[in-house]
Amino acid sequence: MNEVVLYDYWRSSASYRVRIALNLLGVEYQTVSINLLEGAHKTPEYLALNPQGLVPTLVIDGKTLTQSLAIIEYLAELRPECGLLPSDIADRQKVRALAYAVAMDIHPICNMHVVTHLMTMTDETGAREQWMKHFIADGLGKLEAMIGKADGAFSFGDAPTTADLCLVPQVYNARRWGVDMAAFRRIADIDNRCADIPAFHAAHPDRVKR
Image (cartoon, rainbow, N blue to C red; front, side, top):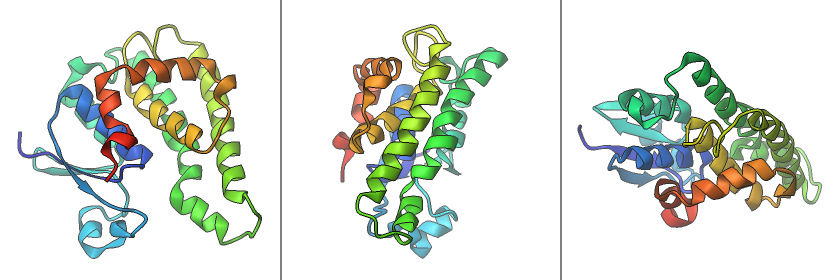
């Protein structure tokens, strides 16, 4: 395997997901920090690498990969024994549904560029916090109900899957914005279990902040 390079931002949820996946698979990688607050994602050099100007970007096996879930699925297919995606087609659908509930429903509407645009449209004090709390709490409530139908210690089964790689960064964001997690006991329990796993622990934003 050629040198693996992850272009990420320490607080990016999408980057956080990929860091966990790489750690779980034991893939050694170098990190290049793309500071979103300083506009590093908008430079011609980075846009040549990732035309969307988003993080993460993963260079692996001589390929340049973008979009966190597509990257994670690539890694899961490289190492099917890792269990990030179950072997059964119906089980894979369930795991994807849980992952997509975060990555496609909660995360996009709470993304930095969306909320930055929101703040150009209002002078209301606390609008950013209200927006974040509303949409994160609403999304986690639906996710809690989805997970509640599944057995096991994690989002699906007794080992971490792609669903947990999406859940944990979203819980980090929920706590960051002051969302009351008391109503989401199943999610909080899963997050606590993941925190005890070295691969999750090492990927936490506080441990990779640059």
